[in-house]
Image (spheres, rainbow, N blue to C red):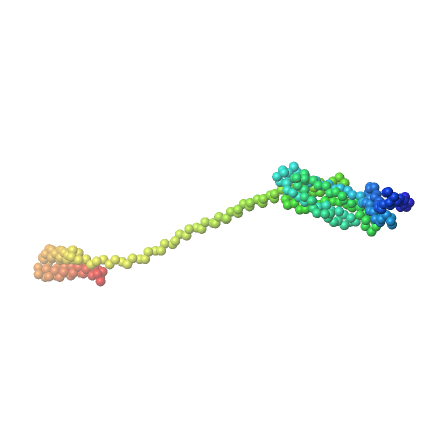
Length: 263
């Protein structure tokens, strides 16, 4: 082989004196790290192009579940989660393919394969960096540890439920000051109209008359005792007159208030 090219002498084949048409082709034995491509034909020659296959790597990821206290989480609380592979080239990060799901069926593990180790940027081979990200997980925090060479571990830790706010003690209503009872001022009773006494009748009048007559009688007796100094007729007349006046005055004094009351 000269300069990567060589010639092959073609010999005509005959069968029973007749020439046979012979077709020629070439194949290259697989070369590690390269991809082979054959073009051309036997008349004009063949060209085998070897294109280097960029080196590739694998990145594994595993998920671990933790309870809020750091202990292993019960399987009943675990849920399938999706993880995205991300590559970073020359400071720019972009997702690689679609997210993969980690679940109990695959043991919460996955390996990304056939990842190019380098990429040509402006004629320069630049190493590709790989990382993983987990899509949001409600109720859990997500922590990624490890590296692309040794593998990544995503730890999901359960978020403890929020501590309920203490119920505030009800503020007691202020006890109102007792209102002193107001003692009503008694209203003095209206003065009663004086009861006018009924006029005395019958017995009272009779008593007054009897009293007057008694006084008259007494006067008569007194007159009789002094008849020595007075003539009987004169004394009797005087006594009767005086006693009658006294009796009438007394009777009048007793009867006048009764009559006024009756009015």
